[in-house]
Image 1 (cartoon, one colour):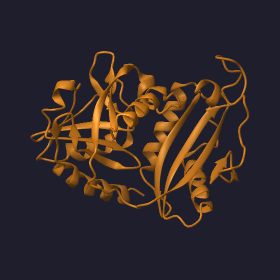
Image 2 (cartoon, one colour):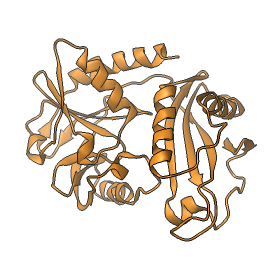
Image 3 (tube, one colour):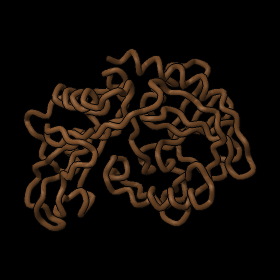
Length: 281
């Protein structure tokens, strides 16, 4: 089910034309959101990240684009997506048609799409999950890399590389050869009682689950969380590696090169993540 500027369409309906700026220039932002039984996980975080990103890209924010409007449009779309308990929502915002690199207007449109999810909770499936470094192209260390924009050519090419070489995922590097993130989420390394994740200044996505886990870990007297650059040499020395994103929650890495990992800390954290996701209403 698709919601385009408040009108509902089926998945196969034609909505855009060849002048769409999201298609022509990647002039678009999106939020990927988990919704379960009408409850939008981390609603405020998604809304305020989208508003902040629109301001950074100098998009005009309509007066009616309140958090209540954001919430209502998501719920309208999920209600129209029949026979689904859990949904994956993509809420996209793009500048309206017109202009070449320089747009004729900063006015925006939005599109909400809903897909069924198989499980209403974050779970660890325990399946083998091998990763490798992707070294053909690099993430820039700037604020644009922190945003969830439609400019995703690097992860797309990395995804093709992973598929061609039978990896579950790839880890991306910045120009200083620090490990920044995975194709589809933020990165965490566990060494003893210290959990490390790359800082935003290294170019990683300003992820919602990243933010939530940092908050959880800061309140844990047995674990120490730090935001520091990660060298590729640290990967094989870690006790655990896991990836986070809004849809999957926590994805444990089970193998990197010759090193195999357990996921005891990830098991503990996924329960706590489920707890706060259900509490935040």
